[in-house]
Image (cartoon, rainbow, N blue to C red; front, side, top):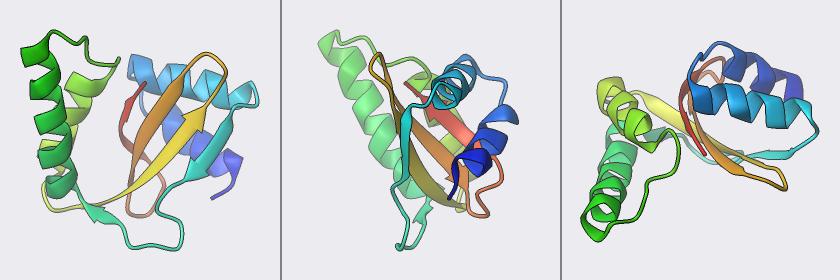
Length: 111
């Protein structure tokens, strides 16, 4: 995946997390497609993992990262769709991006 493809995918998502991730990416933040060379994951499996993490944070008083609540809902809505993971790392923030199987749009973003 090249930078402009990730920018395009993020630009199609109007969530606050995706807008912040897009700004970081345009400001030369590092990025990586985590599933590159690997098979995409099922949204349902990712939902289970992130919903558990979210619930644990709420129960222990940890403030969930920006966009996590929305990401959990969007992953659940994606059902059995295949999802690729990407990350963007800037000096100020780290983002996790859930991309559609064809890598053309962002399913959810948190960070």
